[in-house]
Image (cartoon, rainbow, N blue to C red; front, side):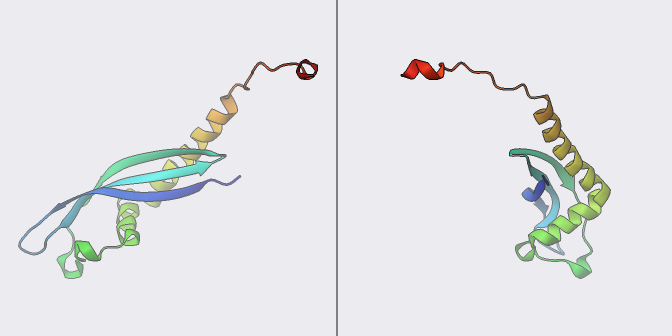
Length: 112
C-alpha cells in the first residue's frame, strides 16, 4: 500500500517596507501522511529572507504552489523526502507493534 502526502501552509507572518506590503517572513509548513488507514502529520515553521523586489509577488497574488516551491527550496527536497519517509515509517511501526484486539463473545449456541 502506497502512502499519500498532502502539504498545508498556514500561519503566515508578514512584514512591510517602503518597497512592498505583506512580505512573507515565515509560514507553518505541514506534511500530512495517510497510510494503511492511519494519518500522521509533521509541521515546522519556515523562515524566509527578504525577497528580490524585482520579481516580487504581492501577497494576495501568491499561490500555494509558489509558496510550496519556496519551502522546498529553503528546506531542500532531501529534507522533505526524509520527513515523508519518517511519517510513513512511524505508521508502519505502530501497526507492526499493535497487539491483536482480544474481546469476549458468547458461544454460538448460547443465543439459541
